[in-house]
Image 1 (cartoon, rainbow, N blue to C red):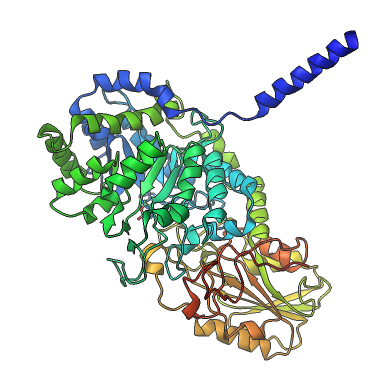
Image 2 (cartoon, rainbow, N blue to C red):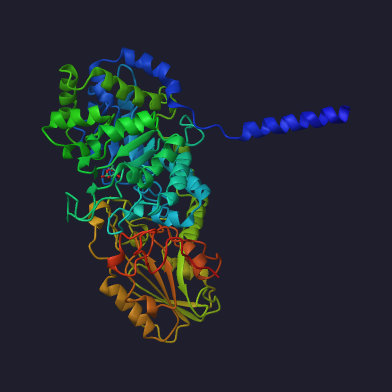
Length: 611
Ligand code: GLC
């Protein structure tokens, strides 16, 4: 009998353990409403409107304006850096300075400070820069993406920043779009779980964790589905264009990442600059309020994109009222914040924007701040400078290196070219991106557009990684143009795109640059095995190089840890990456996807070799 009872206890304990370990979902933000409502009840209209206003710090007339206007949030857009430069200390001092101002206000409601930490804390010198999402999509590894996001959150917190405008859960359907690389995949099944994993990593076990930051799923919805030529900006190609789909298709393709990130507890969502069937998302009440908030139950707040409401019709007051009434809760103004505040107050006073809508927006913002512990004494308001010793650490770089390994997709490997032998006497390296950290990292690195060259310290270029990987007896030579390879045991040519971001990356043609084709030709002319590595934010047209390559690796935009590329080149890691974007044979196939009768890519979605 005793044995049976003991067994029963064990079983119940096990069951209890099972129930306990089935991780509860994130805490519902509405569970903080009693505190949010109590605070809201004390607030004046000025204080409420201030919470809904987000200027860029570049445009603050003075630090005092943070208190003068009761600002709820400030951001650093991609080029909005401390005057003292991009060091860890300069950033932490900047954010602390602003945060202290917010604590001077009557209600001492701390700021949410937002930044585009989209592949690590990418603005800060010495940060670990991870592969952009297109590479992470090729890993198909949610646990890895969660780990990356966790490290990113810690490095962001080291500067006192508490909000990252990530993950981007776009589903890019036309790779001519300049933001393709911000997407995990061209299909929603390649985005859903990775986006949710990123939110779990950024927001941690709970928003109140001082090592968590607020996540922001973006850009809602259909940012990656715009029709070619519908853009209203730049070369008028795709960015910020019009997504022309029926609602069923929009939901099937472009809403899936929001279902999963809302379920993961994402606290903010950023509506897209783009339009759906001719109506700008920033003013789309059906999608912002009826679908996202009412049907899908999103309890956090909506933050506009950078000056996105300016693209709505009518005068400024009309733009503001249209967006807020559609469901926008906070506006990334980012420049004319005094005018924004004056016009929104007018709209509230004359009823153009009902006070109930203002209160709903502020309640949502306050819920998140309370959930983050920002209203509790000294909870994470200022930069945790103890974290500086982990910033850019070897441990963080090791995770980034593993992400690079897992993101590489082997498209071709003939005659056992890869892995390269470490007993080679000479390996000749060429190509414009072999020794260029900027090309390795891509856009959103140090600056908005990124830049070729070696502005980001602390990482390893692919050339440096190859030199580290080979024994001292092996000679590694380098020529940008690929010449001088004769007599080498193998040649490695690293080619691709120079950095860009957003509209600047829209292209009508995805052919390789002439200097890239020439570098491959020069290497090939030496009559040795040639490995081509492509660093790009999307698939490109390979008709001029693929036949000349004995092996071909798509490395996307790997970030600072070039060692991960050498790990695959020399066989320390067998390639596991699989394409999360179909690889078109020619420009005629761009935008053609699985299920389309004309689907006939050079390499299919999900393709990837190993050995
Ligand atoms: C940009 C981007 C958005 C970013 C925001 C703040 O224009 O569209 O992804 O988060 O502005 O920099």
